[in-house]
Image (cartoon, rainbow, N blue to C red):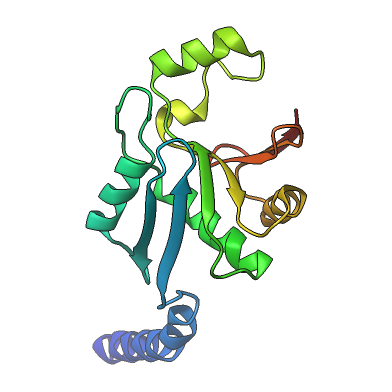
Length: 180
């Protein structure tokens, strides 16, 4: 009798899992996630399919790491894939699927960050740029104010707005926002 009860429970558990699995699977976007970039300092352009479903594409992430390198020192670090997810979701939310991200700054070596910090009070001592978790961007054919507002609405990471320099800072740190 005890064995029959366990078998029924097991059966019910398996049946429940089987019927709910399609609902959970629908939450994962199976489509390839494409992003296009134009680095404003190096002139380099890149379009990558960085993720398909839940799988980040290693070879494509390596291309991103290279493009996002510290262009002053050529130092490269792994870029946080969550930063790419924010960029992807931001562009989709704006509704400009073909827009190109103009990169002003991505990874910064500690040496570069210290140099920039000596020139401007707006550069953080422990900048997330030094960890591959931040980027300063514009989005083609989109006002930076709209980029900022949409990024804030996403509620993910830091969003800094630099209206005088016409760019938006995005990072994967804690949710916060500022205007400089």
